[in-house]
Figure: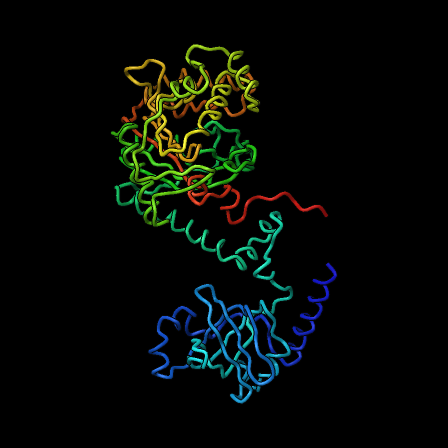
Length: 492
């Protein structure tokens, strides 16, 4: 824009003015002695002792003219007012020359500066610093958006997230809350005896989920490899066989799938594995985890999201997958055909690109689950929808799996892990048939994993959840809760 270019030229002239006076507008160090928060928290003592402080930050506003200026500085910890008076003999920190007029001539909103002075209270009752010297730390060449209007274009907000956060306090608070979300989750796992592990993100075969992976090439081995689609599920189960009783990992996951309010190609998840436990044990632990997150991160257990309201402190009902689908659609998925499911989906305007029976059933379930607010555990999944879960001893075609259902969507999945090597081999083979039929999300067979199972893995419960859960609790699309979501290149 011409306007922005003109503003940039004005600031370039101010930059040159600083350099002409022998001033480096981008020094490598600051002489800051206190953060703004330090000064505000210890304000009374600093005033009583007449202590000289040096604070630094971005200039967010400049008010006044002539003989006195009021500047708001924000260093990320807090914001504070600095007062420059011409009769104070204000100096430039690095060369002790008079610098009141230099401030007027060269400082703009968005610049980073530091100021030295003593804390005091203005006549208006504002906690401030009475400035005796200042210094430029970073001269900005482009203006920051107006804090009221901000960045309205969504694409621009994501590309310039640093500005979006700078002018939108709500955005900043959300990301601080997200950091606490992961901290609380990590602390919860540690309190319950789980050790943190780190497993490969590059794999020769992907496992632990049904998703299409990203592929890259390992030059040294001259092998095509995949970015992982789960947080080390098949690796963490190897650790169960190795004798670790409880492990967890928080890490990035990559799935080459479409973008939606609930799905992205890159996100962060947590997965835990717990030896000598089953899916019922996992359900209890997960309920406690979600309630801890609600209380410690959000200070409430009641949430409204996607048009649903739920209370994580209320009873978590159990919903049978097969029965719920039959109740809502009249279809018994254990005794139906692709034709019957397709007819129902078409009649109810449900868009589905499913090409196999398994995917058609999944589309049917997604149509049903949106009507359930939760909190709920969905159980009773048929074995053909989950190739890694153990079968229920009392129900031949049902696996011991549970999913957390909140706000009409699944935000966490766990199960009693399959540790029968022959059963696992048969299910891998079925997944290979699906891949040959064109299902790119069907699971790859990992024969090294089968070898581990033949050596023996104890009964184990596994579970995974993460970034989607946070998005639901703050009622935002998952793309909105990522600091820097992947963007298409801008058209030149």
